[in-house]
Length: 118
Image (cartoon, rainbow, N blue to C red; front, side):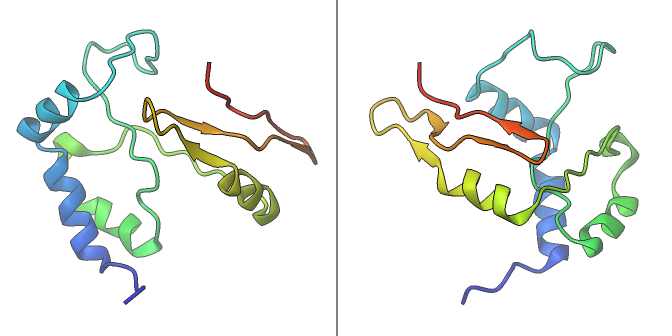
C-alpha cells in the first residue's frame, strides 16, 4: 500500500533481530572486518543504519532491554539535493553483488566522492 510499517512492529522486529541467536546467524553471513572497530571494550557491536527513523521509534528505545541499550547515536542533517544525488548514484554489481555509487558530491562543505568498484 506504500505506507510505512507501524513503529511498534518495526521496534519489535529490530529487538528480535538483535537477540543473540539471530546475531550469530547474521555474523556467519557477513564480512568481519576487525579493523573497523569503534569501541575497544572487547564486546561485539551492531550498527543500526536507519533506525530509529521516527520520533516514535526513538521513544520506544527507552523500553528496550538494558542489554540492548544503544551506546551511541549519530544524526546526519544532509540537504535533500545531496541525498538525492547520492541515492540516484547507487548501483549493485550483477556479478559480485557488491554495492557502489557512481555519483560524487563536492558542494557546500560536503565532500563525498563516488564509491566505485575496485
